[in-house]
Amino acid sequence: MEKAIIGKKIGMTQIFDADGKVIPVTVIEAGPCTVVQKKTEEKDGYNAVQLGYGDVAERKLTKPELGHLKKAGDARKKTLKEFKLAKAAEMNVGDEVKVDVFAEGDRVDVTGISKGCLLYTS
Image (cartoon, rainbow, N blue to C red; front, side, top):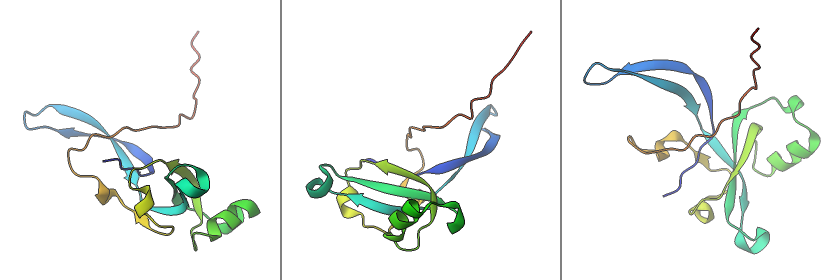
C-alpha cells in the first residue's frame, strides 16, 4: 500500500540495539499534513492529492498561493507536494494525514533537499 507524508529533519541521534551496537538515526518531524487539492481522473487525467505541511503566516504567501490554499479552508501551508496514491480517490480536501499511517517496521523511501554546502580544501 502506498503511503505519503511530508516532514522536516530535526537532527541526528543514536540508538542501541539488543546486542549493544550503536545505530545512527535521523530524527524527522513528520506531519500532520493537510490535503490541499485533489486531482481526479475526469478533470486532470490522473488521481493524486496535494499535501501541505508547515504553517506559515499569511503575509509570507503571494496572492495566487493564498487563493489556492483558501479552497482547502484555512490551510496556510509552507510546503506543497503532490503524491500519486492508490487511495487518492478516497481522500477529500481538508483531510489530515498523520504519521500513524505508518506501522513499526515499514520500509520507507526518503527524498531530501540539500542546502548545497561547498567544501574548499587547499
